[in-house]
Length: 340
Image (tube, rainbow, N blue to C red; front, top):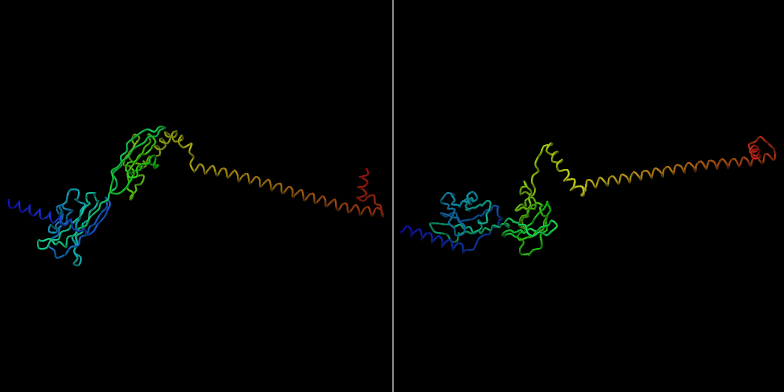
């Protein structure tokens, strides 16, 4: 009976000391995101006999007298590491927590003992904040809007970090319906009916890529998986040929009305080639007309020159004929021919 009473007194004493320690001022604050790693360092006097480490008012999970053995819960095993250091007379206790969980948030306290008594001026407290994004989004099909459109209502649990919900259909981001400013985790979207859609929540500090947005999916075809960006399956040449043959009609219908940039560029090249060819023909025609006119000009000039010199000779002959008639001369022949 006395042993039980003694243990109860010790427990009450530890609880009161812990409560007093929790009411003391926090020495430091550390803020991390869920899934990250946090390191908390507590400095203490090296002449102490024992130190303990605990979270809030819980039972200490570390005692220096236990040779670094830890009393951890199942979810803490493998994630909590403690190192006791003494660097040139400066002692410290270092707690490292990997893959932070939301319930790791709290105040971590180091109690320092000397000669069996707690050194109140050596109590160290560090408060750890663990921020976490909103929960995964879930969506349900709502009202049909006609002409193949349907609304979907999406919701997600709030996190410590502000966030919102977004959806993608056929790889295209969908703008949400206007909603209340204070309810970004309750969104309504308008989508095409019977076309695969992927939705997810995200925090404003850490956006998700489109290929990571797969909290929920709607209108998946048979055999499809919940993956917005599935990895292409490697196929042999024969399999590729068969699939292309089977899907030729479907793809020809969808792509015939939407020419690709490659086809548009090819048409432009053909048009420009025709323009260049026509311009070349016009240049050839202009060059031909120029050469022909040049030839005609030279011929007319030559003919005019011959007529000019002939007139001179004829005039000179006429003068000689008056003085010395010569019926066999060229001008006399021209006159005779002209007379005839």
